[in-house]
Image 1 (cartoon, rainbow, N blue to C red):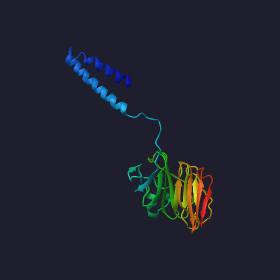
Image 2 (cartoon, rainbow, N blue to C red):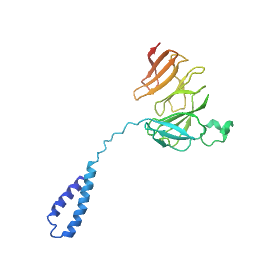
Image 3 (tube, rainbow, N blue to C red):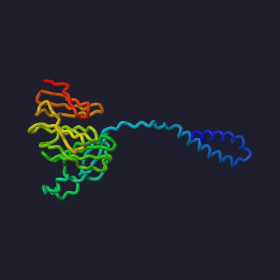
Image 4 (cartoon, one colour):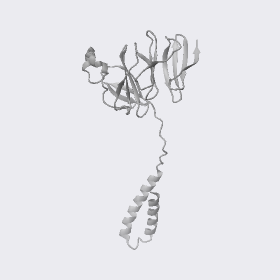
Amino acid sequence: MKFICESATVIIQRLGTSLKKNRIDVFILLLVLTASLAACSQSQELPEASGETMDWERQEIILEDGIPWSVDEQGNRIQLGEALQPPAEWENQDLGGRNEATTLSGDPDVQGALISQTDGWLVVTYTRGDTYVYKTSDGGSTWVETNAPDILYVPGAVGFINEDRLIIAEKLFVGAPVFITKDGGESWEQVEMPNERAVVQRIEVTKDKIVMFVQKGEERWEMESFDLGDSWSIIQSLQ
């Protein structure tokens, strides 16, 4: 492009001296070359690609009539795909016509996030002991149901870590167990807590660490993990 622009400039300069010889033809050619130079000027003003990718900003996911929507920090919404398929176990449940449902229906509590341009999680809860987990690997166009942890009550805090790892902390019922999957929802294990009735109030996930803010009565803990939830340490305990 640079060579073409320089050539066009030289041609215009030379043609300027020959306008009197063949005024009409040269004038037309000058118009063409001038337009070319204008295009060159615009292209040279554009910044060159640096090859660096922008950091992904995690987006919340909501459901409306079973259809997933992403919501950014400004509240802008984008439909991600068609309505989700109903949970597999609904096939054997006639409560409310679940065994006849073709999509996820009703008005469940939803906690979901796109954690990258391709990967995301949805935790869908209808009532006590009725929680389902979905994940996407194509930016939300399609969703597949994974196994869910053995939740007796309802989820409280949820920590979206990466495409393979998710934390679901149960609200206090008999206890307040915290579950983590490390294989995309195939299996779940419990996180050891400082007290079986200590409740996770919220979970913060950054690229460097995971922090769970835990409380039992007036006692509070902060639990940190620097290895994606493989191990945990209590960094603070307040009375």
